[in-house]
Image (cartoon, rainbow, N blue to C red; front, side, top):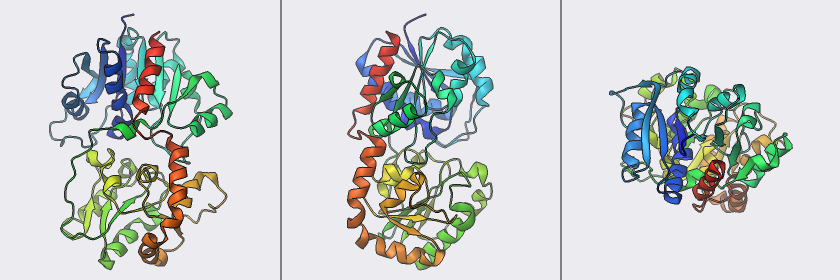
Length: 368
């Protein structure tokens, strides 16, 4: 096989910031190593082509079933071709590639079901105590890259071989292509970011979501960024109608599709995080700030490690307590700051920017 590495950009745009910094680090470490970026849509292609200008060894290639989407704005989350047919049609190309790097489990169907010489490396995306652990498909990869030692130990405890799990730090923390900062609001009021999770058993959206938005807007003292998990609209198709109804209203910026949803722009812009169990809170806490959590489902969360992140702020058990909790959060934040700092260190490991270089070294080890 020719000495080269392939990166699979076949999934949602939310995966890109977890993967592209490794491309840059690998190109810097091995300037003559051929790197192929396989893309599933023209949205992915446009972003990666712009960023990769000057990286002569990087080639962007269209995967089978590639979708040209001229009507989509740059970075908008696009409709994807079916992943499994795409993967199996891509297989003849990957068979000639020694190392394949991906950021989602679907691609691991290939090494899980076929006796391949190609080595697959999977890098975790997302962070936090609600992450899925130890899926059997992950074990088909040659290596799994995780952000923190806690993740590594969790996979080992679940049966993974220790040598398979590599701790790198949080790759997305080094993502440089964030959407340029824009003035979202005319009025300089404190900014709340509300990010409900996309899975019904973890999310505040279905029981409380619309009322949460309405109560904040009716209060009139805060600006609101409503940017739920990118996949929520798949599970809640009524969401687009709800967001359309917010158009033109003062004090709210609603986003369901743009790249700013996933590149860290909104977590950087917020003064207060409001959510349930989304891993975005961990990225938000890389710079400690007030948090409020919504216990819309009445979870018995105090001793449940799945809700460990809720130690970072007040937990609201009723809608009537929402605005008082938001009002009180800045004054109470000093009591949560140390917890937030420790939680980020535990969940993300190194966030100083060294993670992509460590991931790149794991890729080079696979080539050897």
